[in-house]
Length: 268
Image (cartoon, rainbow, N blue to C red):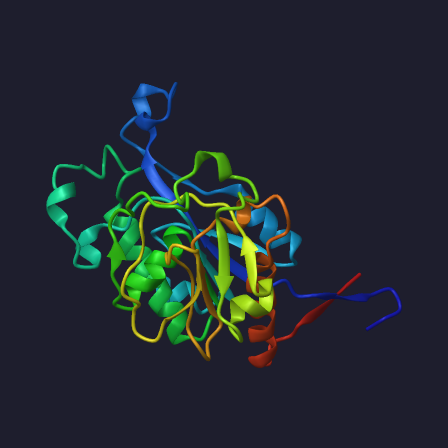
């Protein structure tokens, strides 16, 4: 390396999932293009990943999961619609009349299929995975787990407009299992935001519960021995810096090093 060059870190590629919906669902959209679709992503994920030193990449449903995992060093499965009950053995009668083409904010089977396939492909290649809210549930379903279709009212507010996007309220305190990945990031407990009405019921193969709220609702899961973490809250919306976002970038950087790939490159 010449005196005029310097070594800069290679930023690991982190794939981020999103949504797809018809343009006629957007107020004020030109009606001529109403039957066309657009892909949408929460910018907060890309911003936090970039701030942590990663290179965020938005993934469309058309990005073949196995092929893209040959390039990615990390995957974030983001929040959004309920996972369709057909994916986990739930009651499909309650959603039979919902058309995903005109109401994709409730369910999107195409997204379910893409994200579960992406999780499985990432796990096969040892790629770090972070599941956020719906993403935690997708992670669980991809491994054969089931969900609570609708949480009953209780002492903890899980579907709270007042706490998303913020750092949450005192009643939404998540306590972590000693020695877990989550405990290593947060300590014994942390206060989070919350915006969900479904939750993990039975864990998928290999997943373990490492965080709960006081009412017993599962808020964090992990896959022991693998760089896999699911959280039920929204770290991208926390006003404070949530360590899960820096964790996924750090885990991806470790994967690059373990593969023997260059961790720095020379620039003039």
